[in-house]
Image 1 (cartoon, one colour):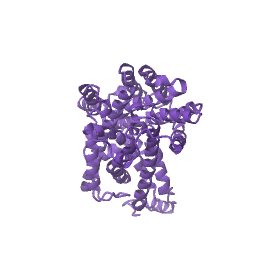
Image 2 (spheres, one colour):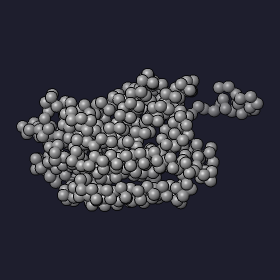
Image 3 (spheres, helix red, strand yellow):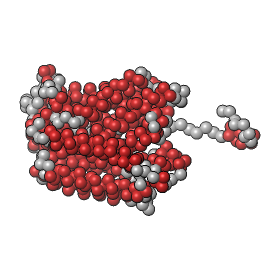
Image 4 (tube, helix red, strand yellow):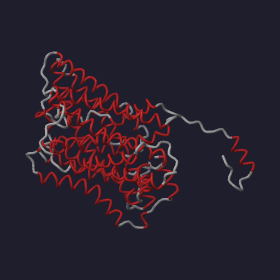
Length: 490
């Protein structure tokens, strides 16, 4: 290491004598397991189960055109630049675009929590009274109680919250998933006929126009979040060789966890009877009844609810913290939303978000079909998050061209091609989301498009534009260097 000019000889000697900091590496298999645990879930299984055998196609396609490009591109960005998607987009495009990216990471949670907690409400109904699963009022009440309880816990700065979701992969995904698939296989093995056709002619979804493919959009949300896992690429001994191996293994595991439970549900529950929120519990209830073990249904329901609530708590303060730190440095949010409570938590952001979430939750109470509400919220969540990926893919190409010599621990092969495929797939998914799915063809197309456009474009684009347009110098409330350090550590 070169010693800077003018540095004292004693200091240089002291530096030379210092022991190098130990680097803690992880194996590529361990990284694959970490990625799988953060992506895989049973919550989306009912959405794809309505397609029966065709769900295999509908999971594999977005894995190839979205999950793979996202994984490899975000790994290059994470290995070269700290600070997450805000810094990547800010350096690749501009700071306003960086704010838009970090805002959308936060804003997607506003609709994500109602859809996640809608699943919790329907699952919890099978512990108390299955008839409640179709009650919009019950769903709205559960969403509000769970969300505000989560805000109370998070606002107290509970450091152990992360531990609540550490076992989520095992408790709420692997064990129920294995049980579901095993019982489904036994169900078929006993000579029972599958509710969905399982012959080769049903490998592709029936074509009824673009509306027949709309449910594939939900899979983009299922695969999202890879840019957060990419930060671990620098912990591999040989990122160039090990990271692709890790991602392909993770893709395989994720596809197995997504596809097999969806198929198991399609074997037992007919598509026209399937609830998008309660479908998992419908399948468990039917299977346990088949084997005279209905007493197990509430136990599985509690396992799923526990894992989902733990995941919600670990997500609750994360995205808003990143938005807070950037806003303190650049003045993107008014001081009221930047205030911290005595525990150092951005309570005002969480409370404001909670008020919006409460209003959204009332949609379950006033729209008769709970599945329709769940689907609409899932689409809006996906579309807002896809804005982040559109910006990320463009920024990655710009950074490769504008900063070719910037040190990167990993360089994605064929980056421009990967970004082109990922961008096109993300844009297509965003646009397709405005088309009502064939399952909800009886509703008002205009109302559907209005709600989705108002939620996705209004929350994802209009709100951050207004914050940026009317920002004031007094909104900068923190020292830039200190905030940069906090962002790099967060």
